[in-house]
Image (cartoon, rainbow, N blue to C red):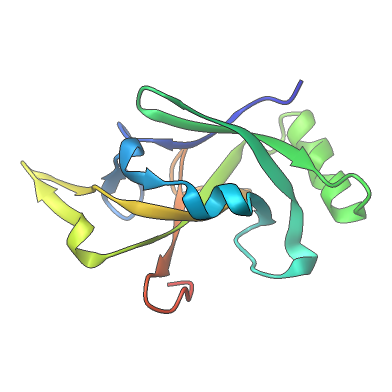
Amino acid sequence: MPKPFVFNDENQANSYGFRILTAGISLKRFKNNPVMLDQHYNSTSAVLGLWENLTIDKALLLGEPVFDIEDEDALKISGKVERNIIKSCSMGITFKREDLKIIGEELIMTKCELYECSIVAVPSNANSIRLYASETGQLL
């Protein structure tokens, strides 16, 4: 049985200095194409597999990896995940500027859309993110 990855923990700020509210993450687009990329590289050759069993558990957004073991690169990374050498993933999201708000003394993203979730070697935090511009979908 695959071990779930934590996509987001709303209680933890990322290296960009803000938290993302889990309830504000739209999964609509992602559920149609739950792609797992290697290091946010948007290429068909970087697709490692997909994510299933998306779950929200209080402040956490979780998902289980399904690696494409017919692909040599994906099989190699799958082995590193299975052996607990690689333990982290990172969300690729898009958002609107007005959804990044100062609440109290914290910067909080109240809404965003999940584009993809990547296996990464070193996340900006336990649930690091990669940002995409909402107008163009370009990696920031």
